[in-house]
Image (cartoon, rainbow, N blue to C red):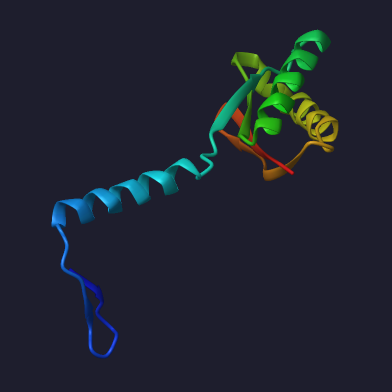
Length: 123
């Protein structure tokens, strides 16, 4: 096996190819173990959400952020609720101020059809 092809003269070692492949796979597996995979969790809200339900969802959002996950907050408008988009935006502003100590807004709230989406990441 050629170990250092750029050296002058190139460095080679006599070894079993299957053993070499096994050691390479073992190193790759070890490297994958040390990686942190960031998951995106989603929390869905409506513009007519009650105070207790809101606090419950905020607590879950904070738990997700403490674990290191990103959170996608989705405000859903149904039927005639589309006339009151401003209520949904106020709730999202309140949410962003409530979690300001734990997370920060990665993607500002934006309207996509009947939804307003916002992405929050941990600080």
